[in-house]
Image 1 (cartoon, rainbow, N blue to C red):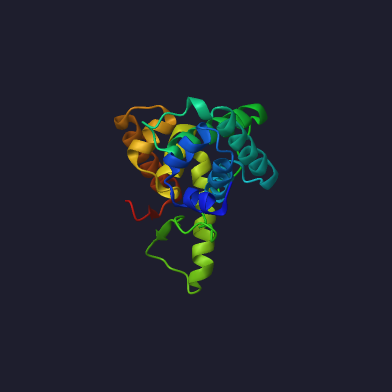
Image 2 (image 1 turned 120 degrees about the horizontal axis):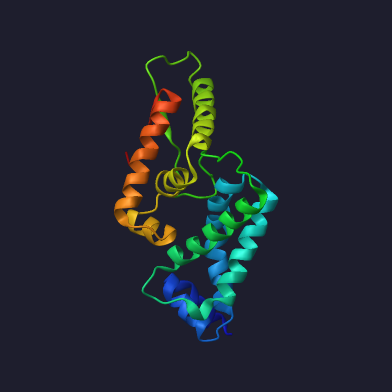
Length: 202
C-alpha cells in the first residue's frame, strides 16, 4: 500500500478502519492494533494483575478480532465490541484458574484516559502520600470482597470510564441492572473500607 493510503487509514474512525479490514486491507489491522494495544493491556491487567496473562489475553483478543472481523457490524462501536471479546476471554481465564488476583486501581501513565479513585476521610495522616497509598491498598482489598458482577461493573465504569450504554453492551445486561450493580457496588465498597470512596463520576 502506498504511504498516502496508509496515512488516510490513520485518519479514519475506528469503525471505518474496521470496514477497510473487512474489505481485505490488511494494513487496517495494524492500525487497530496500534490504537488498542495499550488500552486493552490496561483494561485486562485490572483482571489478571499478571503481565504474562495480560499479554496472552491481549494477543488472543486481537486474534479473535481478526478471525471474527466479518461478524462485526457497525451498529456497535468497535471499542465496545473489542472490550466484549477481551472481557469474555478474561472471564474464561478466571474460570480456568479459579482465582482472581487484586485489581490495580492506580492510573496507568501510558493511558491518558485512565483515572484514579480519590479516597478521603476525616483522619488524614501527616504524610498524605502514605495515607493515600494505604487507602488504595484498602480499596484494592475491598474490591476483591465484592462479587464478580459488582466488581466488573465498578472496574468498567469508575476505572475504565465507560458509559452505562457501553457497559450494558459489553456485559450483555440491561441498563437498569448495570446502574444497580454500580450503585450497590459503590455502597458495599464504602461499607467495607469505612471511608468515603469516590471517583469523578460519583
